[in-house]
Image 1: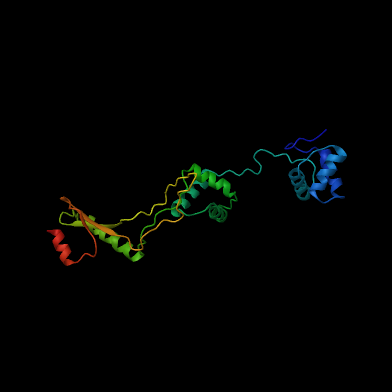
Image 2: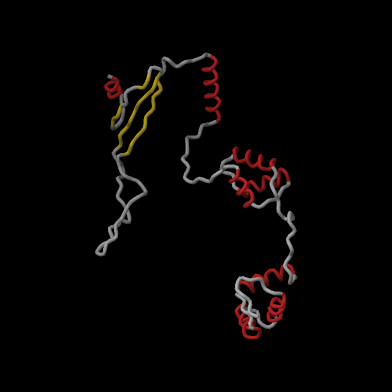
Length: 232
């Protein structure tokens, strides 16, 4: 009776494959002999997978999987460790997490299981994150001391104006563009022009205890004359 593709091989078919293997080493020839001599149709992938398991286990019968054996489950304490390590380092990979579990608690689990548990804990991957300016340890300590002193002195900042500025480039540099196909010409540009030194507009403003200041917009370089003129 012919074997169906995708079905498990019978023990008799496996014996025939091993017998033909002594004569022919090619998977294609083994498949042809099975079909012509015994009328059994087996895919080359099926023959390859069986021979691979045979070289490893030397058995014709599939191993019966016992429930609970080989299925490592992470306990709540292990999930707490994953949560803690991920909070300490948001760039920690599953492979690195696996090594940390090995070293700390002697537990060896697959990266796929760690990825599933991390996803269940609510962690999601994100690419293209924006970066921020790195603060040195010296400045971190000084800023902390300044903040603690402000709290101790009950500073209300009523006589302080906080200002900040930003720069806007007056050019188009987006990644999204549109094109139109037609029978005569495909209206699509491979590259788009962009100025080397784009026109820039500077925006400056501030806030205080009394409210916000007026927004100042200017081009070029801010000097003392422009600063005094903008203030008036």
